[in-house]
Length: 367
Image (cartoon, rainbow, N blue to C red):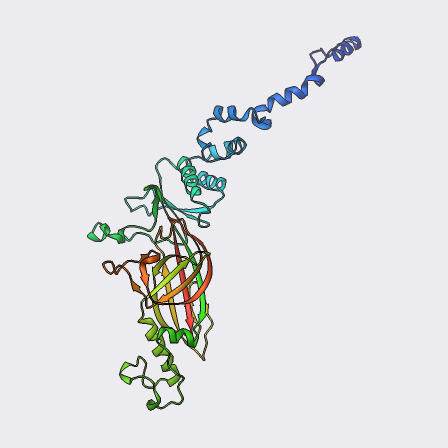
């Protein structure tokens, strides 16, 4: 203790007695410990009571430890009700994101969405994210939607009939029919070279063109789908691509035992590469001047398709028939939904199907 109550004219004996009776050196450490007991030291057995005293109990369902809750006290409480508080809440859940507010002209101007940094790791994470955002958001605002990888916004119909159609709604589903919408998407891209065996099994194989003469064509000119001035070898490839395009096409998902999880209806298009290649997903395939023709097959699962199953492989099924002819337009079929057909281009994949995620699979077939 450096302070004294003695006057400046105290005698040496008085100063000596004052120092001898000073207990501050003994009790100062305890005093310092007590002063930081609640705000710095925070013993483990005291933390539950501090959480209650500081009014932080609303974070208990979303933060695993009392220490984690107390660490948020000042930085989170000081900005609670702002976008910054939402960002801190997302960080607690292990995510980050960008908040997007609707234009001020919209009736739903206070309903914001969050573009997350990735697809949710676990389904339970969505409840934690929604809860943290709910207690962090501005009182005037509503958390409407969380997205990553698949974001189709609602069209502005300006109070016309169009605004009441499906175009007036945005992508996503709600967990158990309540809370914010979630709209996630993942993409997978594959290339595959079709062999003569594949093309023969599909029934579209044409022999190599021996010459450039029309008389050497292996198909009627009336069925040709290319220009008369085109190279004969190119015309052969165009004809095969057109024949493949005309076949019913499905993408098959199977588990690690090669048991079918389900089939998703696919789109099949014959395409020609440009000078810079062919746009395929977010990339461009390198142009191939010797074989500029290919077939692009793509399918996107719906929310909840295959929910709870894990796919280990994906392939294409051409020419199959739908088992239940009373519902020929179904987009997702169960394992017994198809009969017949030719399966090609099987590829390894790892997908844990979720009710809030759409899986986008693309194949580029060369031959």
